[in-house]
Image (tube, rainbow, N blue to C red; front, side, top):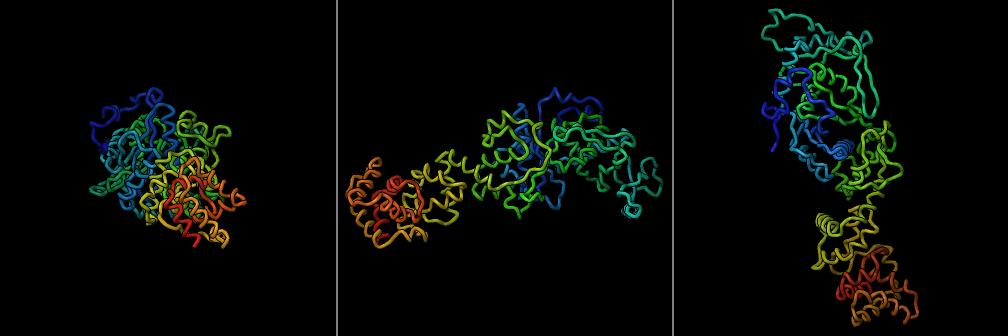
Length: 493
């Protein structure tokens, strides 16, 4: 169920408290509440995933609540598919919100209510400036070398008869003197002269709210105590503070986190590699590994690199986030993913690999899934991603002679083939006990007066089609006598 906060009954405070100044509960006395607020105009970027992770961890560390708001006010670019992709990405990462998501577009009536309340308080005004007049202001500012800015012509002006029935925007009255100070939990104290702020539009002439206004109303109604987001929003914060201050609302604590760059220092993009959360899933990364890696991008605890989720909750505080941009290192992520793979549950890995094999249209043998599960403790030791693990698992699930790699095929010399046929005949009658298979191979090599490698390497090639595999005795046991000797005879032909 989607919670519609535009209904008065759903307001976290009585309506009168929302419209009267200085009647909010002190933030420090409230449960800490954070939010992640993506726009559903495309995939969830890995940078957005880190923002969600930091919000989730901060809330969990302080025993608070973590929420999700879908900022879908851009009707032309927002899609249901993007919403589903965001929810899917967050669920995969284990970062689903503690309450049903709030959809910003459903709250327009509430945004208009607050804009009109600001009018009533004398903190905002109607503006009838036409598009042509605004364009003229921009051109004049450019000619004079000034930043384009509305000239406030309607700030203290009463409308005349010619404005009757014409559309108007609502603009907030920016403070004209002094400065706005934001004590940021990451950036430190940040200041801007109020003379640099403009009378921004909070309600457009078509009655729709602007993003900067809607965000403030939503954060207030959702009782957000800490706004943790990318530092590309820092300049927006000073403008949003105008709405908080005009309404007499306590501002949340702000924390603006540096962005993630590529290895070359440029803004992270697809040319650097995967940037979508679901791309990382498809490439075979585990969610715990991705979360661990993202945690270490801009935050750290000494030299610790491997930080499981429970420990991350214990250690994390937003004040420990650095101010410098982080650089994405795919090699480090891959190495870390290998560590998580080796610790992962074998049943879970088997299910995932079987699904990936099915997507590759690999045909399973009758006992393919059983063999894969038997070999999983060994297969995962060599893999760095689930895709690598899947590729290494093909020989285990198929029946019959495996596809042969060139290096493996080179091991099958005439002498090796003859030995494989002899060994296959020997193993057809030898006792087939798991604990004895390795010893049988050693005994065979000793009887033939050759080194074990001269037996094991061609045998590995015959059974797996590769020069690398789990231990030979484990492969023999998983395949079973019939399948193993079939492959040996096939390779010896």
